[in-house]
Amino acid sequence: MQQVSFEGCFVCGPDNKCGLRARFITTEDGKVKGTFTPDKLHSGYENIIHGGIIMSFLDETLGRLAFVKDRLFITHTLEVTFRKAAISGVELTAVGELKQWSSRQFRTEGVVTDPDGEVIATARGRFLVMSETMEKKLLPDGRKVVEI
Image 1 (cartoon, rainbow, N blue to C red):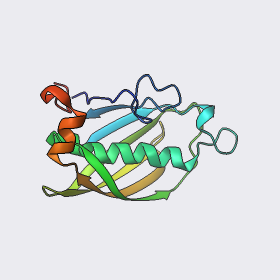
Image 2: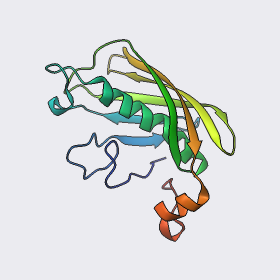
Image 3: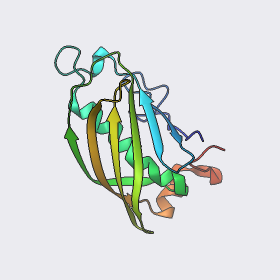
Image 4: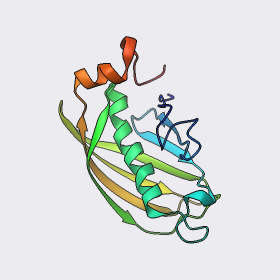
């Protein structure tokens, strides 16, 4: 199932020329899967993707597990372990899994891999479920966060 994107978002905004333009889906088993191909502009060292870019991709992937429950999120804590350098021009895939959910917060785990299945980074996160008042301001007209 496709997930929505937010126009100005650095990670998912399709029209954000400086952003990652990542695409996300909800899998049949309730996980979130994201893909994007980093550009040289996302590099720290030549052709090696900056760690902050990988962290942003993981943050968005893990946080979007709230979308599965039709809610928005705010990041509380994100712990990332880097395993291998990501190279510009090589598509990356992130998969996030919900580990614990309550009405106010949720915990997640995820991984970023390259096309060969090599692990680039792993992460654990704690996220806050956004208040309904704030959601209504961000999602006018009863819009849902998951496109059906």
